[in-house]
Image 1 (cartoon, helix red, strand yellow):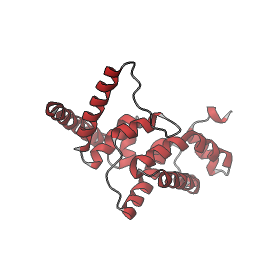
Image 2 (tube, one colour):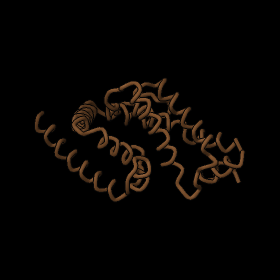
Image 3 (cartoon, one colour):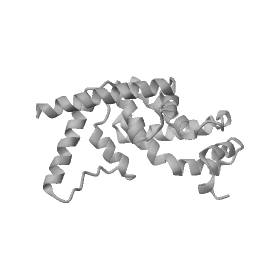
Image 4 (cartoon, helix red, strand yellow):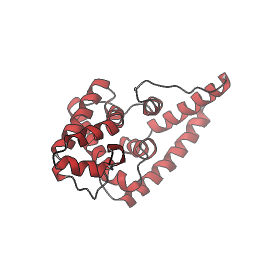
Length: 195
């Protein structure tokens, strides 16, 4: 079976049996995602690269303890998140990256920021205004609320996997996410009225 056809969980089982080519495939699959995820927290490209590398080192060293009945992606995101939070505690980093920059970085594997490319100046202006409104609304939310938004809408994780990453139950995540979206809608309306 080709590496592309094997699931992440099968690759982890192979890695736990000493097949290091499985780690190379996991790195190939997730290196850009983990880097962007770390960049979301750390807002520093070099530190994000270091934490992404450390994440894969931790995956390698913990491969024997990985439960192949669990999903791999939330597990690796949890490792990356914990490393980033520990790094932030050390450096006392400030707030999370802006929504526009994170969303742009998320779309580009190279890490290059891609701006909206509408067909005309009026579309570009309207899109920029909507992004600014959304960014202002997001900045009024707490860090945990922004993290929920990022995991759900940028990483596209379901509630159960978000619960694995952040701790808690999927029901609690759904409830918090609902409250965050209600607050975000209200804040977006306030920001829109302020224009």
